[in-house]
Each structure stands twice: as structure tokens, then as C-alpha cells.
Image 1 (cartoon, one colour):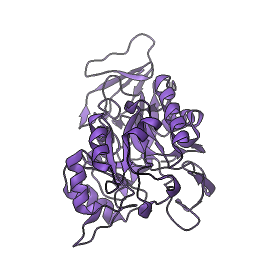
Image 2 (image 1 turned 120 degrees about the vertical axis):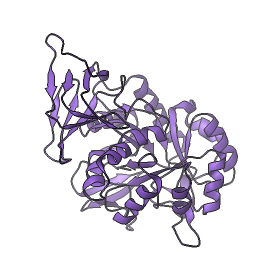
Image 3 (image 1 turned 45 degrees about the vertical axis):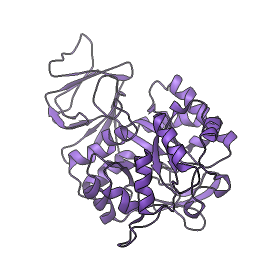
Image 4 (image 1 turned 180 degrees about the horizontal axis):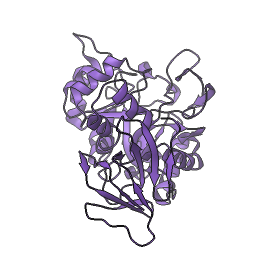
Length: 382
């Protein structure tokens, strides 16, 4: 399939005059002089925008499937997410026993080794547990929390390269040794579910941490004399800052503040989605706990927010139309910046080898369709 006559977001900028060839589930070629081969399907974008697939580095579940149920659900997530324009993702764990977590990581390994033909690419695990603070548990189950330990990580993920990102509370005993070992092994360490003060955040950056999990949520707050995790991370250029742009987790001005402080090259749009994403309101579960979804908000029985029902295409729409981000910045924050935050240079960029899951947007920035190497699927909504 050849796609032409569009404004292409390459991962860094918009370019006109580029054509994109999709074949065998990947972007095969990107260039200015590509010509259709005999019998090749051609899509004329008629000036619309074309984006690489979204990259979601923090997503627990989608449309009734949950990472913690293992390989079958992860594969279903891969297939379903592709239909929303997500080209790659990190299945994200919840706190559980080390044995159960090890089974999930093994399911992620098998999905990476034998990927879904028409699915979003699995980049590796985001372990959002178990090295978290009991005082900032959020929707995570505290009974499984423990101090950071490299040996425990190896018991859960025999091959550390399967873990692209791990969330932890850096104030816990053993944190410095763990962060240094994880960073040396190529794992990106994210600060989250933590009672760390600003000084500890900067210190964790010295050890090698470079990421903040759902900034402002489940962490010490921003205060003018105690800046906490948000204040430290927004002023420390070493950190990528995640943000859930659903209008529920963060006030609109806080999203704008993160973008102003970090810029599009360090602000990371995520969904933090749970299984009700893409589903109607009702009762669901997350990490073995009942979750009640009403009017787009997912909460535990006590009212605690428990993930979101956001999709990445909705996040991009919100960034532009709700939060006022310029389109170039919004595209970065949903594709190439999340990818770079975990050391990924292919997915999230319009380059040979990236997933053949692209999104088409109108000049007014409404999503028109998802394009794969087999079809263009029009979207009835965002």
C-alpha cells in the first residue's frame, strides 16, 4: 500500500511531499519519489495529516482485557488497540504476588517473540509495582508492596530486557542500589506512588531515574515551600513527565503547566487505561478490585481514581482542542516523546520498520481513520 499527498508527521516535524509504503505489517519506505507498483493500492490523503501510531507506555487494560490476566489478554489488547491508532504499547502491571507477576512478564515475552500480525507492537513491560509506598498506594494493592531488590526483580523478570519501564518509590530502603542497577541494565526508572520530597527526586535523578509516573497523581503535592515530586520533576530536565489528559485526573491548567515546564520533548501523554476503556459505564475490575465507571471516571468504592478510560487518539484530540497545545507539540507528546522516554527510536516515528498502524486527521484536527497495510478504517468518533 502506498500513501501519498498528505502532511506527514515524521516524529520531529511536519513534512509535505512524502509518500509512505506499508508492507508486511511495517512502514517499508518513506520518501519523496516513491511510485505505486503494479496492482498496489494507493491512498490519496488529499492534504490531510498522517501520523505514526501512538505509543502508550502506561496502559493496564483495554476493552475487557487486562495485562494481569496474561498472554491471551495481552494479545487481545494488541489487536484492539490497533483499531484506535495505537501502534505500540507497554502492558502495565499492577501489584500482585511475585509468582503472578512472573507469569505476566512471561506472557509479555511470548507476545514480543510472536507478535500479533495486525496488532499494536508490544515494546516490553511497564512494571508499576511492587516497589511502591504504602502511603501513596492509589488503586494498587498494598499487601504486595516490598522494598526495591534486584534479586526480586529477576525473580519476576528473568530477562531484565523485557522491562522497559519500572515505577518505584525512591525513598524506600535499597532504592539507590536498585536504581543504579536497573539504569545500567537499560531499564528506565520512573518515580511514582511515592512520598518522596523534592530533594529525594533530584537525588534519584543522580542515581539514574528519568521518568515520572502520572505526574501529580499518587505522589507528594506541589506546595510553594515543599515542591514535592511535581515541582522537582518539572524543573529537572532529566525527567520525562507522564500526564493523563482525560479531564479527570488533572485540572486543565495543570496539564498546561506540565507542557509549559517540560515542553513537547519531555511531556508524555499516557492513558493509564483499565479494562473499561472502550466500554460503556458499569462495574469492572483493576488489580482484583471492583471499579465503578461513571461519566468517564473509573473509581474504587471509596472514590479513589483507578486508572482511566482514555484512549491515545482521545488524548491527542484533547491536547489540541481542550488544552490548547499546538498540533506539532501534541503529536510529539502522543508518539515520539513517549517512545523516546523508554529508549525507543522506531515505534512512534515515521521510519522504516515502525508499525504499519497510522492515523489520518483532518485539517481541523478531527481523526478520520486508522490506516494499516491492509485497510483504511474510518472512525465514527474520536
